Image 1 (cartoon, rainbow, N blue to C red):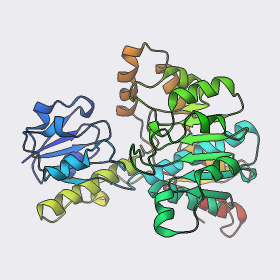
Image 2 (spheres, one colour; image 1 turned 30 degrees about the horizontal axis):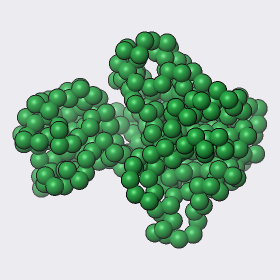
Image 3 (cartoon, one colour; image 1 turned 45 degrees about the horizontal axis):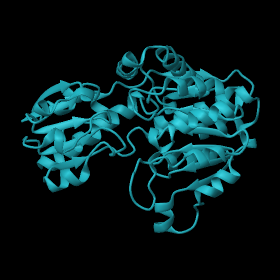
Length: 379
């Protein structure tokens, strides 16, 4: 059995070599004639899997080591009898870490207390739900919008318009859908962008086309009061360089790129293929992923500055912003390849949960804040 895998899926050989012959490819430029040779195709979000790619081939199972599935033509795959899997929630903790880094660094840059802001989360899936839990544990006011869940579950959710009117922080975590009553393509169009509250912070670590990027670029030219953090872009990898220069911070679609998040995705699609084949899953993340380095940090700081210090010790998104700004200077023809290279060569990043903080009263307010952020507090 030939298993064709995106070269950027970590631990793919240790997980899958017991099931078949593994060959790795550039997922961004995978040709149909190559894909059609495989029995199993393992991809990430850069590969559009549809009839054009697979028709007349022998692929019987497709798995994406990602949360989303908008790059998979699910209708075609079902009609063709091809098994499908993805990895919902695999990197959700890493994306929440990213948003927390953005929020604390924005608060520091604006010299305001995060507690003074009303936060809105659009999309309460794996990421949005975890983000809400952490923010509420910090004692922050959080409003949530998720129309499909509101229809299924009833109360607890607000219309998008309510968030636009009441929130001065908006975090977008929706899938990208182009049809249906709750389509999210250009959910934030020009009219809604122009109607944002003065001083709004807008963070998109979901899908690029949920925001009309051209309209956002033009609105930012007119409104210096807005603060925007983008990890995802329309037309990736060829992102809008002008927009990248106008946002507060921009990063190359790496919010979920923690070591743990990417490896969890591999484990989840490995388990899915084992179920599809009817064989036991003999490999596990625990056995294959190196444990995180022990990084016990003694507090030694005042309680106000400690949370941001710890967050940036684990992950400071301003470093990724600097990398993106450098490649934004490149000509259009070279920028896309450079964007992909940033993702391909991304430095090792561990999740907040791997950092242990000592020197605090475990029952004190500072320790409770540190735990709410996602860190471990040890004696």
